Amino acid sequence: MKAVVFTLGCKVNACESASLMQGLYELGYEVSDKLSYADLYILNTCAVTKEAEKKSRQAISRIRSFNENAKIIVTGCASQRDPEVFLNKEGVYLVTGAINKDKIISLLSCNGIFLETEDRYYEKYLPYGQLKTRCYVKVEDGCNNFCSYCIIPYLRGRCRSRSVESIKNELNNLTAKEAVITGINLSAYNYNGMDLADLIESLQNYDLRIRLGSLEESVISDKLLLATQKLKDFAPHFHLCLQSGSSKVLKDMNRHYDRNEFMDCIKKVREVYPDCAITTDIIVGFPTETENDFEETLNLCKEVDFSDIHCFVFSPREGTVAYKLPKLSSQITDERLNRLMEVKRQSKLKFVNKFIGRELSVLIEEEKDGYFEGYTQNYIRCYIKSQSLSGIKKVKVLQPFKDGALCEVLD
Ligand code: SF4
Image (cartoon, rainbow, N blue to C red; front, side, top):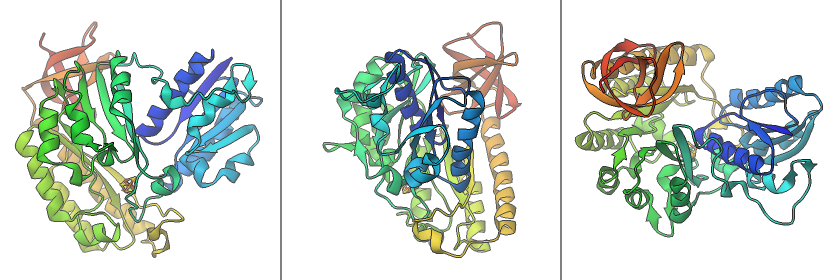
C-alpha cells in the first residue's frame, strides 16, 4: 500500500507531516510527500490566507486525478476552519481538523482504516526523511497572541510546549546535520518554567548546526543570545516578524511592540552577531495602513537592510478582528507590494555583496542543474560547480547568483 502526505503551508505543518509519514512507514506503507499514485492520501492543509485555503481545496481534485478510488484524509488548519467544505468532496474519507491531527495514525492500518485500541499519536514518531541534511524540529504548537489579522490561534489552539527530554530524544536520533527549532509561536516556548533560552542552553553539547525558526522581538534577550553563543554550531539567522514599520498599524494589528522597540532588538542582535542574517515578514495593505504608514515600513526596511523579506498582502480571515475593517483596494495593495518587493530585492543583494571574497561555511543539501546547493550559517543560498560535494564545506563567495551567491570550495 502506498501513502502520500501532501502538505501546504508553514514549516510546522511540514514537520507534522514528516512525523505522519514516519507513522505510516512504521505501519508498513510505502510513503512519499510528492503527489503521485497512491492508495491513501493525507492532505495537510493551510488557512493562513484565502489563497492558501483555495489551494488546499484544489488539492483534492489534484489527488483524485492520480487515483479517483483512493481514500483521502484531510487534516490541518483549513479543515479545522471549514470541515464541511472538505467533507462534501468526493473521495474524502475523514476530516480531522488541526486539533485531531495527532489521532490519524491511531485510525489507520496498512489495509485500510480502523480504530486501534492502543494510541499511536503521530508526534511520537521521529520525522520521516530524517536523513535529509536539514530538518525541522517542532518544539511548540499554538499561539495566545491573537494578532488581529491572524486565524491561527482559533485553529491550532493555545500554546503548548514539548518537554526538553522529548526534544533531546529527537535530536539524539537525527542524522541530519542541521536542526531548525520551530513552532507556531516559538518565542512562547515554555515547558515547566523553561523558556526558549533555557531550551537552547540545554542543547550546547550537540554536534549539530542549530537554527531558530520565526521569532518575536520580545524573545530577544541577553539570556537568549548568550545561550546561542554556547552552542557548538549556531546558525546566526534571526527571522524576526515585523509585519509593519508603523507603530500605529502595529497597535491595530495587536502586536505588542512598536517601531522603536523593534529597532532596539535589531541593534541588540547585531551587537552580538554583526554578520547575521535578519529576515522578516511584512503584511502589505492592512486595512488601517495609510500611505504614510506604508512609507514608514519601507523606511524601516531600508534602515535595517533585511537579508530577506517575506511579503504578504493582507488577507481578511473571517472570525478575526481585522476581518470587519474596510479593505484597501487591490490597486493600492498591489502597488505597495511592488514597491516593497523592490526594497527586498535590493537589500537581499546588498547582503550577498557584503560577503563577496569572504569565507563562509555551507551545508550542501542537493545537486541541481550542475550546481551543488546549500545554505551558509547566515542563510545565503550558495551555488557551487563541482563533481561531488556533501556535508559542510568552506567556500569563498564569488558573486551574486540566482537567489543567492556563486561560490567556490576552499577545502
Ligand atoms: S503571533 Fe500573531 S501572527 Fe503569529 S501565529 Fe500568533 S496570532 Fe498569528
